[in-house]
Length: 377
Image (cartoon, rainbow, N blue to C red; front, top):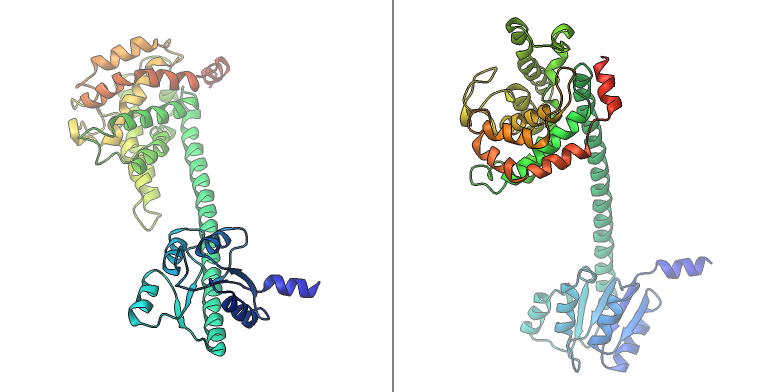
């Protein structure tokens, strides 16, 4: 049993030569130290190398009928499955140009005939040692990349869960259900994707930014945790004084995220976008919003996206103080707000994909039980 294991652990050397005597000679030299395979044509050599159990090293003659050694080497190096197999040319061609051509096509060494057995054995051993080291490093790198990927995914999951937990905390104190979070983040992503090719937005809305917008959108109302229940849960219209307090949820949300930003060493795109959305999603394109009365392009793109998504969802959703508007009515109201409440380009994009908003709303619709539960809060 131990002999079988030892044999299986031996490196495999493929010997390629069109002359039977040379194959016999090289096989006799190597068989006691390595497992050997032989091929008498270039085509056969490629088939063996690309088959199951590829060799660890190839000793390759150059001058063969049909496909010569140079072409065999080129094909080996162009195939990802065999590219890492070291090739040593073993040939009677002794010109410097021949040797250079051998290295040019990818060989690691060049031995001329007639051979010196000790030199062949030494060079084969050297190349197999180098290959073993390279294989070890490649396997180690693959393992480390896998582990890094695994840890990154774990961190991402923790981040996503934390975001949703924080956002849900704000929603539990409001008249809205948790599905509002899911709907608005999906609206934001759908609208951003539609705007991605637009000349005014394509430099900003790359795929990574859109994904960060999707993940940060749930924090838009995180500041509501700081609004008194008597105001936040009031079923009727707020007084001017109460509305002033309600408006502070934008700055409270901003301040909470700024505090989080101070705890990390490097700037975070996710937190920056979350801060922009929390702070400015109640601004209006004409400057009549709050808290800063920003207008037009002075409002961050992230907040302009959120503003439209948030208003659409408020319009179609049932509240204790209002019945839901049908989708068509909500679309008409957003159209009316073009250039006043909403960025006109974003409004135009919304009108082109309003059916997607309806589909998202249906997919994450609030159940009667959820609405009733919120009504009892």
